Image 1 (spheres, rainbow, N blue to C red):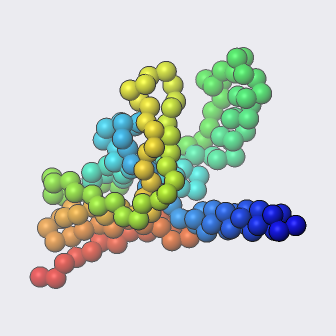
Image 2 (cartoon, helix red, strand yellow):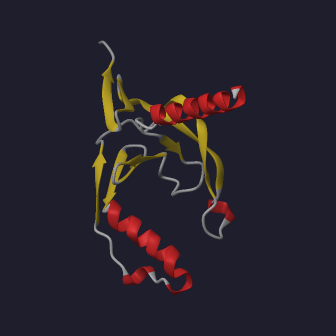
Length: 165
C-alpha cells in the first residue's frame, strides 16, 4: 500500500511540475538545425517566432488544419501527397532599424529539458540536446538599450531596458 501511495505522489508531483512549466514559452537555441540567421525559435499558440539578430519573424497557421493533415499523413502513409493539401498561414517580420552591429545575447533561466532534431536524411541538419531557455536578452541593441524577451501565461513579453544617462 505504501509503494502505491509513493508512486501516486511521484506521478502527481511530475504532473503538477509539467503543468506548472507549461504556461511559459520556450526559447529554443539554434545549434545548426535551422538557417544560420536564426538565433532562437519560440513556439507560440498557432505558430512560431524566429529571432534573428535584429529581425523577428512571426509565422502563424491554422493549427486544427495542420493537426488534421498530420493525422491524414499517418493514415495514408506512402500514398499521402502533401502538395494536394493546403493550410492557411501567414507571416510577418518586425525589424529593429539602425541597431548596433555587435551581437551579444544573454540566455537566462535554462530549462532542464532539451529538444532533439533528427529530421530528414541530412545529418548536418541534425541537432541533439538543444538547450531551451525561459528568456533571452539582446544586449546593447542600441547604445544604452537592451531588449529582454520572456513570457507570462503563454504570452510573449518584451522590455526595452534603457540605462540611465
